[in-house]
Image (cartoon, rainbow, N blue to C red; front, side, top):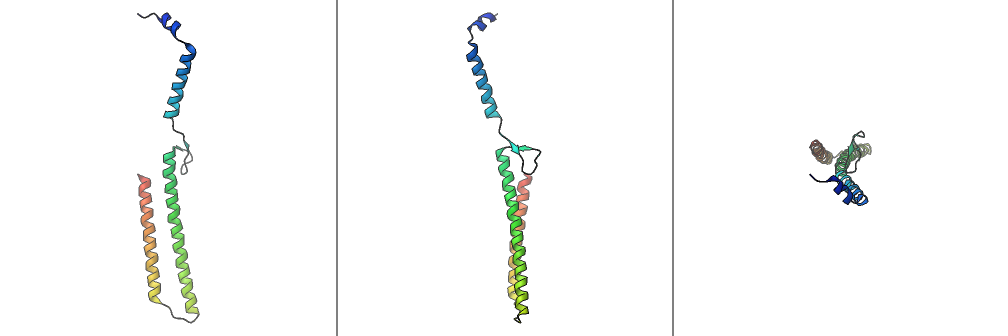
Length: 124
């Protein structure tokens, strides 16, 4: 059996406490990632990569909604311009209106596809 008194006499306690404190600090510093409250769920904490994913999802959602607003404004302007053209006594250009409507449909479907892709990424 080892003589425990021999071990206690040979250990330099200040150095030993410093080493233990340093090891505990390193375990805490490396093992515990910093967290902040979530942007979507304020009751939960997220790490930096999770916060980045949330931010990208919010920015994508912002872009989709902004594109939708711009599409609505363009459609409103198209209707208003055509109404002014007819009110001025000019003729209505159905091919121009059809072309514009098809372009708006294309922009709308692209925004819808982007929205679906973002929703699919959020569910992963």
